[in-house]
Amino acid sequence: MNKDLIKSFLVSILSILLALFISVFFVMWAKGYGFVAAAQLLFTSIWKGSFGTSMNLIESFVFATPLIFTGLAHAVAFKTGLFNIGVEGQFIMGMTTATLVGLIPGIPKIIHIPLTMMAGALAGMAWAAVPGYLKAKIGTNEVVNTIMMNFIAQHFTNYLVMGPFHKPNSASTNVIQDSAKLYRFLGEYNRLNVGIFIGVICAFLVYFLFWKTTTGYEIRAVGFSPSSAEYGGININKNIVLAMVISGAIAGIGGAIHTMGVQHQSIQLFGFTNFGMDGIAVALVGKSNPFGILLSALLFGALNFSSGTLMLFGIPKTIVYLIQGIVIIFIAGEYVFRLIIKKRKKGALVNG
Image 1 (cartoon, rainbow, N blue to C red):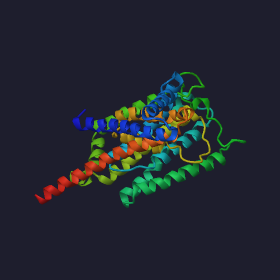
Image 2: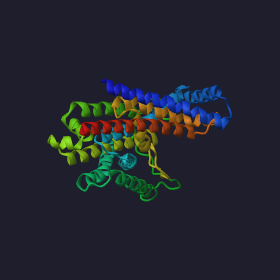
Image 3: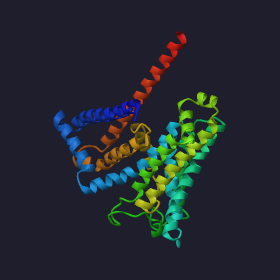
Image 4: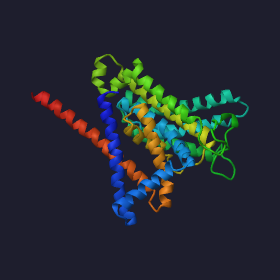
């Protein structure tokens, strides 16, 4: 691990600590406590809500699992200099497609599980390929296009759930076949499943792609400096589309695993799942490093699950989103600072 990467991770750790420190003042304001009492209440409730019992620890891993996939999906886009806001929609399409394939009866489990996961991956790929192609061929902004694709994914899912695949007297589809469900470690009523290990394997595969293959080198080169990459003979447009497709595939697999391991059906969406949106923070805190993302996903999964415990202690659960927001602000500030330094150095070279 090089020194720059270590420094980046130290910035992430410092950002998290500063976010927790600042959040204490909001607890003081909400509860009327002193600093020490507010800090003790906040940290105790977060710890108890995420790791305090075996059940809470298990659920923290459940919440972290989809964030591994969405964090990795964003990391692939970030490495190419892209901002794939559409990870949310790609995750949703992975969930929905997995439900449709999972409802098919009569398929052996050994075939049904990989088939369902593959369907989720293909759905995510297709959903990401459209804005990727438009970015590469026409130059349209991928942020705008992917945001629109998110809403299309949400409403298309609701059409299927409340239309042709509607379960009577519910706002959901039927439960998928047992042959399409992922194995749960601690029994049917415990949601922790093998999906978390698939996420870890996916992190290793992304690491191998980035740093052990020519394709990964080209993707990183395009993100680092498109003009230099083009001068070196790298096809920028091809790598933009490829990165978006890979990003979408990872998000789609994450959605499929969430359906196969946790929900076992699709439900009517009154808003976004927010796994794709939280994945942005996960990738930023993890510095787009696959192994950093594993730790970052666990952190945000634990924070999200602990929000219920915070309310039991009289702390608004929105304090979790406040912590996440402050972390992102600090990390984004680091990127802005580096950009300013880089521009100043370029200006000094030109003037010199």
